[in-house]
Image (cartoon, rainbow, N blue to C red; front, side, top):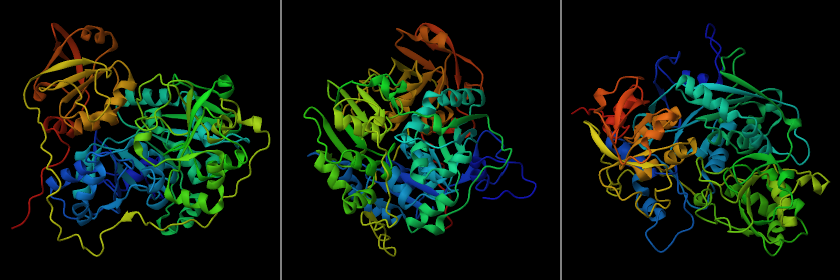
Length: 611
């Protein structure tokens, strides 16, 4: 995307949004922007129901797709059955369906649909990795996803940017997973939090520098996928000749657009990373990033290779080569979750998959519940070594170590953690250029065949508005909330508020907000990222800031009384009753976000139809 003469220098995120906004200067607390792609994974039926309430007929988005992310089913009614029952409705509205078994949403979308210099909205933070191709992704509430489906646009806060300049070359046995962990170790998340707190705006991480052009698109995707762990709203890589080659191999060369930041584009902070100085790293059980040598000798009971982030096709080939003629130790469970069906076919046709199976690997389904440990949880003894990122806010400590594929190959070969450089001879991998692109598990509406389908399977969403004062039960932290969707979140009927003392607890609530609403009516914390403020507001949940000292006043209290929304000033403290205490709060929602929280949904009023 080229800047027009006279335009101020812009970051990549600003370029994408300015081309889709009536106000290209992106002034104001919130702006209206046109959406190119829509990805539904966490609550697709809820989003489509919201869109139907707005008046959805057929979406105008370039791509609108719903991924069925549950592959492993039980005897009870499953989400897959619900998706199948609603398939005719969704196809009639122009929404493409991705069936179970196609792979994890992020890597599949990268291969088959993601395009540079586009704006994508989704309900899944794990889709951040598609920023590796140069597509900006925002996570929004179901009501806003419904607005995007029905009206083709959404309201967002203009983001700030952090630039990461890459230089040097990665050494043998160091891969993109290690570089992503280096960002965490270098405190990039702290920089994101500082900018968020100073400007109350989402932060996008933008990767550039001379070595950014040396990385393949899959490697770029691994680096972009760490954005949720860093607290960023999204991540973007430049789109260049490498991007064009990747799209050509996927038979989608027409989707390519160049994307680079303008010289002198305003960034709030710059981080320089020398790829040649990065060593094999891991994230240990406490969440700290350390050298793998620090964990050498620790026994491993489970190795989970694959998932939706942290691994490339090249890494899978390298692992198969390193483990050829080796056997899994008796006490180690070796699981392989191939990220996409395309990768599975390539590995199978090349013989690499057979090498992994001969080692003793078990192939497991690409089910999203694997990411949070609901499926294949770690054993009670020994470490569970994995390549994929953990869910943002995932409770810790757990006996889980996140590391590169080659580090995991060492764990499989030796039954314990260790430095992959002990293999001594580097692996040379050649990736096939001819890739299978048959979307056999993608269901599309054929020539409007779904137009006459009965639209009765989607349950309308009835929001719970907040008009006057309300008294809520007060819960300290997230530990008392249910950890399984099948159980009630809390034994409450009138609504509750949660006081969070850590950012991880805020992130955990953001990940479960759709499940907990409408009983969850307020989230209280010293710091809540602006992207989470918008997300909570879109579900009718008030995001309230309280200073760290005042949190002590909330301990032991059982109720909180919130005044009517009209009585809250903008960005100013309001004295609120917590039990018998009076504590200053700031409602963090801005502009339309307050209207969403008041209405209980972010969906706009239906458009009037002409008689």
